[in-house]
Length: 123
Length: 255
Figure 1: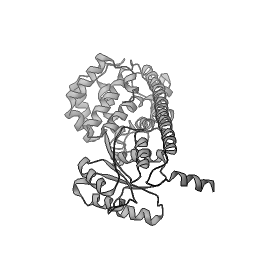
Figure 2: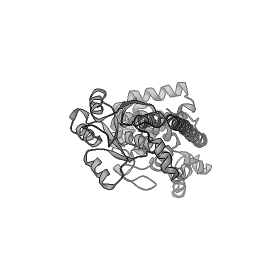
Figure 3: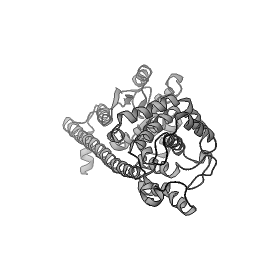
Figure 4: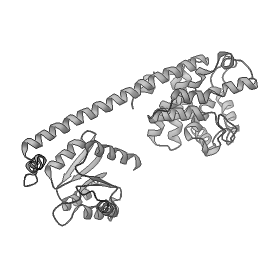
């Protein structure tokens, strides 16, 4: 079963994302901020990180993404950014940080699940 | 204004929705999840029904071609095994198992006096016979479902030859889709080693020699090499299917 780590500081959003991911057979873990996201990513070795961009604390989503990309041990981890900001330069910043995909909030549950499924095919 | 009010009501301090809104959203997501699963199940059911109908048509074509329907079952499992031995992904091999038995579906459109003619064909009869790949691809149609796209590809290309001398398009080498190259090899070997109304089955050794003679001529040399390398396994699969006669459902099932 594929492992997905959901990172968002908003507990209800995490819960909605978790419920959406559970349409399919995924093992879902949650982290509430950048630091614990990075720690859990190293412990759990998830297949995919669903990562909120704007989070309080020292590490926002972009920094977490860049740290994951810089870690050779985590090179297999796919990163999908979820952000309230949908400007072209925001997407670009996400891609610069090494994300595989960039989704804009509010997220469409079906789009999320389809994008994730499509990703396993190309992975 | 109303929207602003309700979104303000949702965005309660401390990163929480209010409880009622949160519960309501969870209900909606749960319903969505149920509908998602029901939709996927319905799509699978449509695909299974479609597959079943087309397999039955393939069976009808095989019956006309003076066989019992076991040939297309053997082609299914031999093509799957050979694809795996060629290092193709399990997903592709499984789909080929389901698609390969439909390769001769177009023979349903070939008149009896041609299909059942003993001995050689005239030029005109050959031309009629050689239409069966295109008729097959037409019957299988331009589906959006990957399985039927693959089946149409196999039907269309299983008589192409590595050297370019096949039909209908005269494709050569890697221009021929791998699916067609695989089915061409297993179909050739299997057809030789079964009894026909006009001859007895060839021994495996004789069929093997005939296959090797066509290595790099009619058939992709790598596909022939891998088939020959795993000949014992292929023969075992053939014998198992002859004994067990696996059901149609074993092709249709969603695994």
